[in-house]
Length: 176
Image 1 (cartoon, rainbow, N blue to C red):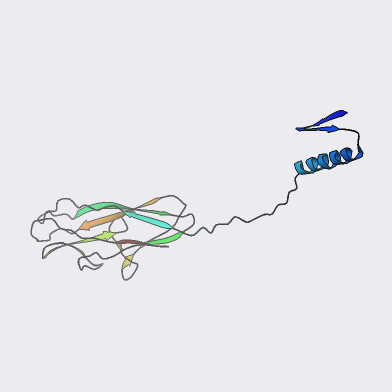
Image 2: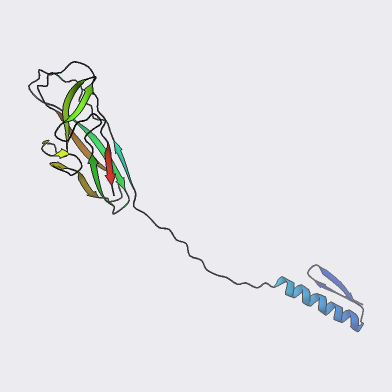
């Protein structure tokens, strides 16, 4: 009787026809079981990139104001815009929360008002507003990097008002 080794299968062949057929069937099954078939398919991976913008406004602090000073009190602040690449945007400032308008925003302390305004240019000629009337807003096209814009503020000289802390809240809005 001979012995055949095939992988982990140890089968003795006794010379009978039945045993050889059984070995053939077992060996064939083992060979076909180790072979594998494959099929494949594809699928799409997609994303829809939308335009997005973020706006960050820093406080504007005029510091100390003297009603008897001969010159206006000027100060600046920064508004940062960060939009997706190629986004077209407008940055508008409202007239403030104290009932002022674009001809004169108001900081208040109780019932007293301190008139000021915000401008798009360092000469303080063009009021930064919402692009209505005599105001302008800031328009840009994003390069995909943060952009800083300077807000130029001015409190006019010679306002006869009570001492104290005056405040207003201005909203900066980006439309894209």
